[in-house]
Amino acid sequence: MDISDESYRDLVEQQQDLVIKISLEGRLLFFNTAYRELLGKTKDELAGSVFMPVSGERYSDVVATQMTKLFRPPYTCIVEQWLQTPKGMRCISWSIKSVLDDNRAPVALVATGRDMTPLKNEQKAVRRRDEELMLLIESGIPMYYTHTTDHRSLYVSPRIRTLLKCANGSKKRSWTDYLTDNPVNATGLERTLRAVSTGKREPPYRLEMETGDGNRIWIEVNEIPVVKNGKTVAIAGSLVDITEKMHVDEGVTEAEILFKGVRPKEPRAGGRSPFRAIRSIFSRDEGAEEESV
Image (cartoon, rainbow, N blue to C red; front, side, top):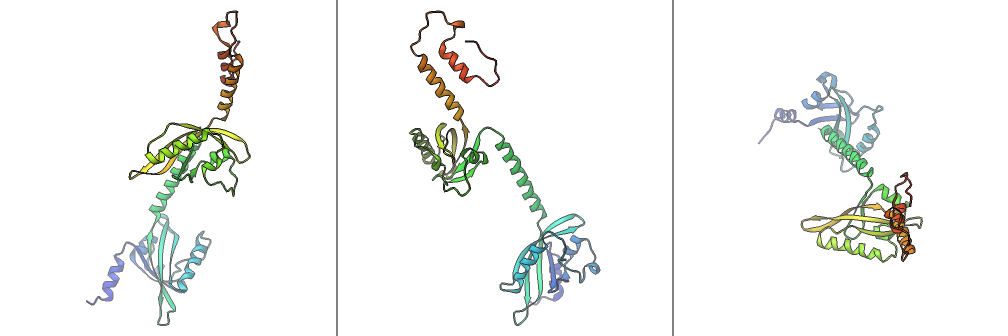
């Protein structure tokens, strides 16, 4: 079936996408109605005008570099261009292909463009929400992480990196690389493995870890398996630094051992035992009023 040039032109003019033809010098040889309406200009204003002006446009260098691909196989490229229009700046994604002569030498360029501004705005909004969510997460006490079922880290809170004093270029890639030889760590590792195999949440547990500078810290871990199609694909969790609390508990335990077996003959002041007195000293909040014992 023969289709006339007029039919082809009608087909191009009805396109919502932008369709243009450009000389090798970068001047417009043809443009459809969608392109003219986007720029809000007349045919006379656009005819022979420069398609991609060399100016201070922030993306001009990138676009020019990409367009060098049009002069070697496969003679195609995709570029993004920000255009000033009556509706403001619009991001146009161009798919460009060279028109070749019998010697396979480019003689002109044809391009179709699509307005990607709504998608760009949506991506920007998503990034803004992610940043706000991250700010909210990072402002709390718990520090968050995710890792694979074989313990490789997927996401680690910047505060965890600071807590563990992770150095750039460190060979430690798994959270298990920071565990000490403390026997208590075996219980925590066992719970993680059980959560992976069962897909069910395990109770919180404690770990002793060694930081990048050789110090030992205690953390309390609360995690949950991420299950897809009945299979655990990752572990997501949070941790809290309880090093100071562990030191306080150790101090209280030592104090109770020290006072163990003490049975004062005199009535205890205020009905308080030495054990409770010592515990109140260790657990008292900073700035609280001193308590007479």
